[in-house]
Image (cartoon, rainbow, N blue to C red; front, side, top):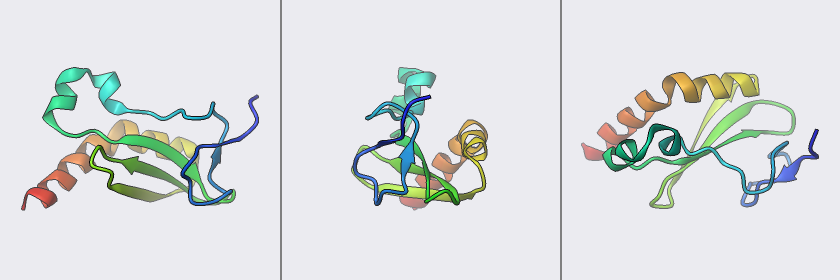
Length: 98
C-alpha cells in the first residue's frame, strides 16, 4: 500500500489520499470528447476530513470549486460520482443559466 500523499492545494493535513501525487479523476476523459464539449467537466478529488466525513471536491475549468459532502465512506463518494454526478452537473448548469 502506498503512503498517504498531500494532493496539493488541500485545505489541511487531514485531506490525504493513498494515491500518487497529482492524481485526480476527470469524468470527461472516461466519457469522451463529446461529453466535454457539451458542458465544462470538473476535475474531481475524493477527500477525507481527519478520518471523518468524506467529500467530493470539484474544480471547474473557470477556477471555481465546489464540495459535495456528507459521505460516510470513500465508497459512498465513489458511488455518488458514478450514479449522481451527471444529474448534479446538469442541475448546477441550469442554476447558472437562470
